[in-house]
Image (cartoon, rainbow, N blue to C red; front, side, top):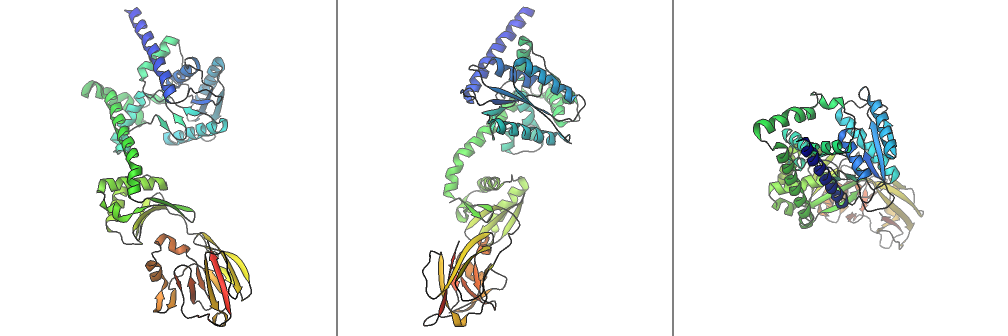
Length: 464
């Protein structure tokens, strides 16, 4: 009986090695070259099996660099680091060790510090990738954990096999019992982390109580069902990713730079033609590009806003991101403090040039007496006798009005008629004279009061 058990485990181990080699090929990790594969090595069963497979079973061999991060959150963690160092020495694997200067105060903080360390090591050695030892049981626990917290379909996809920047998980399709069988056959030793048994952590409650009870009392294959659910959710997300580019083209999606921000926008009418569920998907995608993941409440707020918003209206989506209606488009942008304007004064009628910064946008200005040709984006000439110096190139101000042939008009109204998007109006240059009178807004309006015909003139050019 015992002989048959050992034989069965040997077959399982051989099968695991074959599957592992195929996964390395699928992930493109065995393509040769000198760039190392960074291996996250905690010293536990999972990471020790991963390192052993890579060190002794990869065909062709893969250059390796083990990386161990000591969180310093419990007594004895330094002993784990020394043990890991001895293991790597015995296996002739280079090792990078680091200990947290200030122990993280939570599991989430520890995870952030650990991944920051791995990314830093990977960048320093220009690694081909960084491998972690997450396996199928981890995937089942993650899917259940997220489901219990009320995640959406994207969250149900669980742990991805690959994610940026260069992180891979070649054991994600392998069960822990398979790792234990392999370790038994090759005589592998490892370090147990006592915190993995403490039920004060939600993950440990799922691992040691919820899943065993589920398999015993509810569904014998609960773990496998959860992994399958994650796979189905991941495929759903993949399908969405495939259709998204065509959908965005149909919505005339654009990415623009406004000051120090990027603005992601779509055409309003086409967006409103979408059903609410699909519209929510589009808005979540735009928000993600702007740097924030929308929760259910923020998504609902965004969808409701698009249905009723007037031009110039906006709604905060959280994380420093705003959704605005700008005329016939919806725009998602990160919110940043308005940049300080640097107006440019034109002191007298002598020739000169200089720079102005308006709403975060730089403008090059030049001026010269008389008519003049220039490469400037806009040119305008004004009768000298009617100018009140100093002139100034500035941003718009509340109450700005312009005298036109049709009477005095509000600049705000003129910008609207010129279909200048609300998000760009604060970066429009305004030429005013010493009395505060608005003379010219390039591309929008020029006052009709000053007529330069037959008079000495000053020509001004503004480009940006």
